[in-house]
Image (cartoon, rainbow, N blue to C red; front, side, top):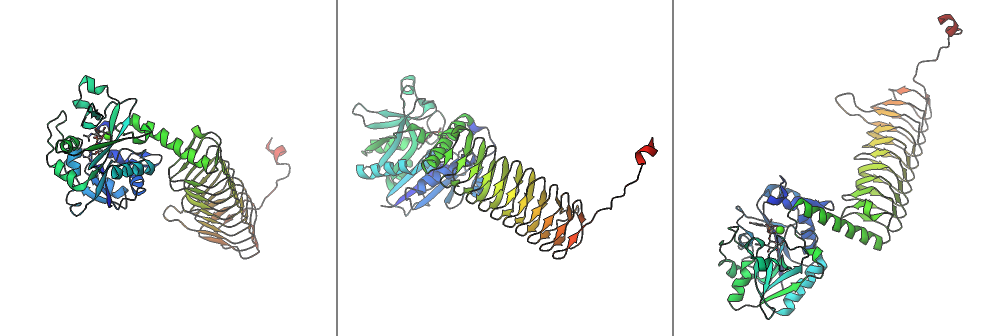
Length: 452
Ligand code: UD1
Ligand code: CA
């Protein structure tokens, strides 16, 4: 049977006290809404409709591969679902309803939930959870025979109802037709003056329908994030989950609690991560690497057998067998080939460094194309900027650059050339030449004596 998913993400997120729409707040390096969408896609739904309103433009810019439905005024979760009626007019079968603020959801949990809904042959199923602290959640009211009667929102609940620990997770499966018929009948006669989606359960039940409830095994998977405090709780849980997964896959994390790895990062087996390391965004790291301590790697691709300690690297590529650090900054557009050695105290920007080249101490290379097996002396600098424009420096293979050389771009040093230490190179150095560009030394005899 066809399954479509509706994700509610139009709310203001008042309790976040933020200019950013709540569902765009990041957990484990990506927006909460994206976590929910991935979980939904993993269940095999054929369409994902995201209801947006507050900050709609920002949400549309940040999220791809879904259909957006506008909710102009945020009149409540029931009203939000009603906004999808046109988009779903030809749908039949089931609709899975999720909230954009539950980033801890897994496809496993949703699959089990949808299976239970289909097996029970009912028109409505709600996913519930036993929360240690149920504050803020809608409470599940069950009849004496255990069947679900209705959901009462925290703000509408009396003292007895507030003691109930079984809560509405905000996740439901409905027969599409029955859902929209029931939504027509929802009113906003409640403490918040909103059209509550939760009210459809009682309406369906009063119309003779049976409501099924599935209790989640692990309440943490269904936590809804309404405040910064809850955001921090979710962050901790998702990071631990990611670290556990990596360790199960054969990655050593010396101290998981001080290692911060984003949800989409990939790391191959037998790589060891030292503490105080952040690995973020679309980063991929190969096998047998030693990463950290104290490194921050963002959107970087790293090959096998790479060592990187005290490194900040972002939006760049590193080959196999490379040694980086300590104290290295690799900036965007940098491509490091195999077996290169970089560091201590080196900055490289928008440059290509050929295989086997050595940049061992205190260099700045910007906009530089370097061949293989180049030896760059300590303190070498590319002068790539004249105050208006940037220029490139080209260095061939097997070049020897003496210490403290300035390479004033645009300039080319051809294969096999040598540059004397302390040179300021402003002209092409032809193949296999020695270039020396510095003032000659003059010694004044007895100068110290005469000065006295
Ligand atoms: C809701 C449920 C509550 C449940 C809890 C689970 C209702 C009335 N209450 O409460 O029973 O325990 O989720 O986390 O449904 N939204 C819209 N448009 C609106 C209002 C909200 O799209 O007009 C979206 C929000 O962006 C959010 C989701 O719906 O993603 C839930 O809204 P929220 O205000 O967080 O509801 P809760 O008070 O948490
Ligand atoms: Ca919520």
